[in-house]
Image (tube, rainbow, N blue to C red; front, side, top):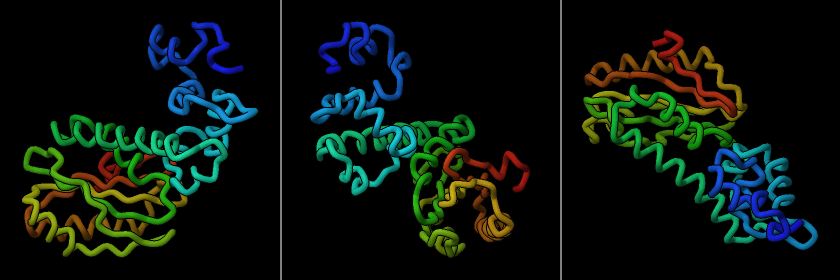
Length: 224
């Protein structure tokens, strides 16, 4: 049934305005972005099919534009809107981290890293460079690797930290397998980086490992 044929209180836009976005189902929210369906597939059904195909919002928002381009009915405008939603979320969290100490918003840090790193097919090692008040100066992807490993060079992190005038860092990397559980090599690397950065008075506040469904904190586990 086309959206225009639904009762007013069942149309996603009217429902959102009357009851708030939390009242909408996932497919209804996505239908608002898509606006129109394709021949033989109304927009709500298209939205539901997309969510099922990509495994929900997480998979859809991390899908490559090339993968979205293969979906019938997703033209350039619709693909751009989906990509824009993810970027808006990233920038909102980044702004929050820059305005207050990261320890005042630990969940925002995890959400930001999940949006940036989860779902990648290769491993990325990133560093959040912080000022003396532990506010974010910059988040940079320092090293990239394969499905299973990445080479990390302490001197590069130190050099960049000194250039930015940072006082502390949060380390982060993803596990393309989707399993966030830290490995023994992750623990050894963390201790090596902690020791190296301490030589130039940079503290390692945490190391976060990003999986498909969770982010594990070394600090919370007492591993630092």
